[in-house]
Image (cartoon, rainbow, N blue to C red; front, top):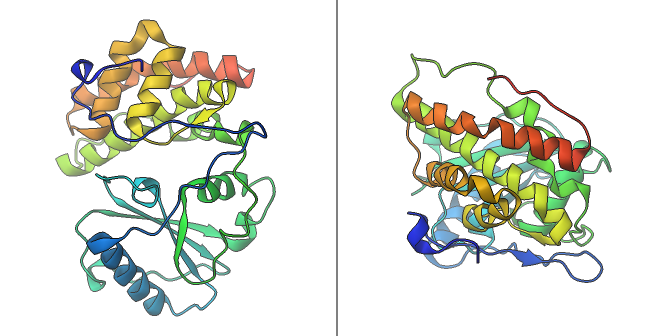
Length: 263
């Protein structure tokens, strides 16, 4: 353990999983049980019915699919042969948590290059709720360059400008949480492949990122807290942007090329 609960407001939820001798990770994805399982299934069935595409697969991913006790949201991915027309979420069964909907085309999902990340991520921590099961036949999730997903794409998701002052406080809070998660996961990815361990959960990602950047543990802990307890303030955004040099250093070290992110 790198950190103790006394060092942070974060609860020690989630765990690092270790790859076997072949570099394979366990499959953690499973349908949630109890009340939450019924709610997610009801929502997915209603969404599937409204879209009306029998080849559409609705997959649960994220901490809820990995058995997390306190998920922040309900993370669903749609795998579709054609771009579906989504109904307004307010016309579907009400959910107790915010829902995040991702979409990947079937062709992209099966592409060895462009579909590598979703195939790996869903094989490791996803489960089919309704529709064709494209996950069960996936190869075992294997450690490799594919795990460095957020860090590899940092130029695309790193802010290109300041937050919009006209945005609501709630929207700014959502954006800041999104950014904080990607920072922590990117810096954890920079060590995961070398150490043969993997996680998407914030607490273990903070732990392994702190192994990579021990002198910056205070900044990393603060960033992880802002992922779980987000603020919509502009000062919070400024604090998150202090992680820029760490991301640039990790990118150069683990991807072998320098990158300059906007201030």
